[in-house]
Figure 1 (tube, one colour):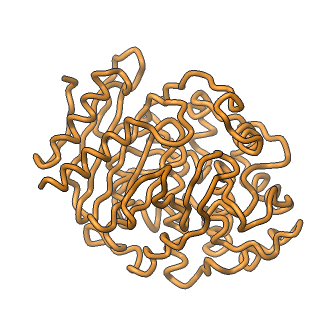
Figure 2 (tube, rainbow, N blue to C red; figure 1 turned 30 degrees about the vertical axis):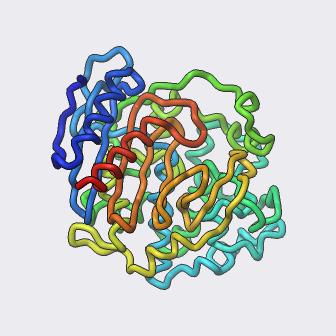
Length: 376
């Protein structure tokens, strides 16, 4: 069996076994898993290597780009501002960002950014990957652009744009970038090694992502709107290794962390706003997550999805408990919050799979944690 480092409560031995099995079968090269229960870590484990060819082992402080798992961090920032009374999730975006009212968008509400229903799933203007480092360009284009469908009627996954949209609202309210606000308000108080905009001194700890086999977006059944959204600009594993990507703030996609840091932050959600003596939300602030924004076939991903405020909610595509919320990242990373169990499970890896929604590796870890808790 693969060597697993770290610690775990014996009740959760099956979680370590699930990670070891993934490594033994070669579906994982390097990965970390964390479970936080009642605000306290009960699993903090890792194993494997930083590269496909082996060599350097995955270390306790190894971090990796988690793609859209970053969205759960960005959503948390908006929820904190809403809970403080500084942001009204039901107010027009233009109240905070006046330029956004262009092209018929005066009535789009903040909640529609968080719920992927604003009609701005991608950019009309062709972009190169490096354009994503230009915050002003990315946000100005979105402010000037007309929605691609009637806002509020359907979700259409805002794969990259959501971070700029929500991030600009946060910037207009606080005067700080999303990455700076997250660091000062969330990561630092929780002592979480998670970064939206990677500091140079952390770069040596990053495990490079291992690309999945190439996939033709049309061949996997994506709607045309999905192809349009996900191909402009094209993002690959190789791009994430470039310095500009790591230093930029791309709040829907370029967060760097490990399972320990993801679970440490998201346990705030699972534990009614407070974990390890730090309160970031009231119970009412957490409850806002479960205000359903859409439920049906997503116009971009082409599968049934149910979105709340910034998180995916229980549905046939994401089977979970009624008071659970989750999201994951391209390639396989995943975080699940179960508010009834007061448990957060996080899985982060370097070997990417091409699945658009769902990954059996993360699912196996989550199921092991759920079953272990049920048996304890």
